[in-house]
Amino acid sequence: MPEPRTLRLGLLQYPVEKPASIEAFGAKLDRWLAEAKGHADLCVLPEYAAVELGAALVGRATTDEPTELAAMVAHADAILGAMRAATMRAGIWLLAGTLPMRHGDRVIARAPLITPDGRIAFQEKRAMTRFETERWGITGGAPPRVFDTPWGRLGVSICYDVEFPKHVRAQVEAGAWLILAPSCTDTLHGFTRVRVSAAARAIENQCYVACTPTVGEAPWSAALDINHGHAAVFCPPDRGFPADGVLAAGKLDAAQWLFCELDPARIAEVREHGAVRNHRDWPRAPYPPTVAADFA
Image (cartoon, rainbow, N blue to C red; front, side, top):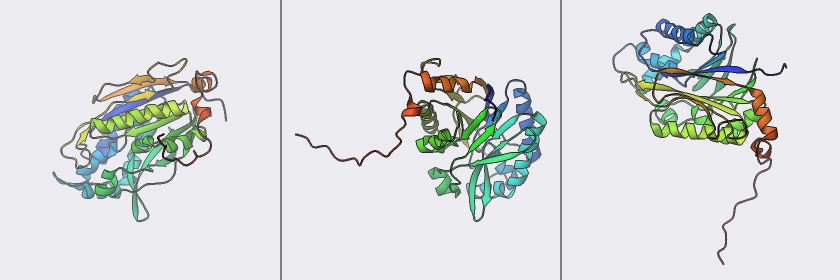
């Protein structure tokens, strides 16, 4: 594999709206990707961005979560086709958020990474939130994967997945120097959990972790009614990087692109010559059993 080169990353703080059809959703992607062209090689949409289509696919003014989800699943192939077509028209790489899809007798959330020539590979969301399991009925998918790209190996840890160190660690140990963490959070509490976890994963693994959320209010949508957050790129707070570990950050709850240039060579450098070597010093064996201390 050739040496990884610098990546221009585009993170879209995606405004939840009410497209009337899958075609209208595709046109919306065209508009946003046109803004990114020339500024980004790889663009990232947030988790469940396409779920804004649910109400239109149900075909009535008010709906509920299970009905909305069933409509999304029934039209998943067509929605994925719109994502693929928009990616090819833009001529860039796109992580198109996540899409609820049927897998046997289960529904899982899948994140499609789409190449400019239309090839697709998926990362499935592994850990489900209470909302997903108790109210939506979505179940956990396959273990973490990595993706070979012109910029080296990348990983995708979707929203709640980034809150679990071993999910990201598995991707880093498989060669990922950048973790993409598309998210969808309806409170600042949830956004904070994702943001703090992403920053922690960047420290633990001495890698980049990039998040981007859905933003805005959508009272017509049972699933995407409220959305809070901002995009950010986290890095090791060590030599050659910002002291706060934040390489770039967007404006809270604003619909916007956040662009950031990432160099994998800087990750290799800090892992070898940083003040600490978290990546190397990750515990390789389980800790011994924990016991209660005796007070003398």
